[in-house]
Amino acid sequence: DAMLMHWPCDSTDDNVATWRVLESLVFDGRARTIGVSNFNASSLDALLPHVRVKPALNQCGFSIAGHLGILYRNNTWGRDDATLSRCRELGITYFAYSPLGGWALGGTARVLHDPTVRAIATTHNR
Image (cartoon, rainbow, N blue to C red; front, side, top):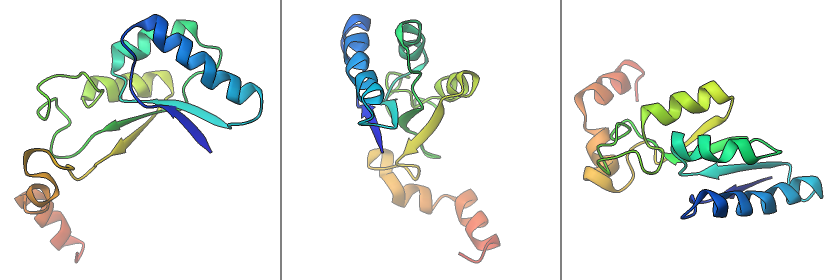
């Protein structure tokens, strides 16, 4: 059982206050794992000096169709390679949602019809 902080708050102080509540769930035995969602590398770096329990995971929308900031034209929600790299450096599991593209930029249909994806599928009889 994991509890996640779904979005970064408007300030680091608010992130820390919210994180403290999640930490209390671990200390009380009500959660085994706590993590964040949609945190970019700078949001993680701002939070980490204040934690007693490091986030076990960072769940972000990350897909083969748009992990370079293409979907949102920036790295606001951690959907970029820099955030993935930072999570690896910190030992935080990067957990992707919408790995096939979700709703944006043509979504899953666009990805499933991509020539490279189709070639890989054909190679594996899929």
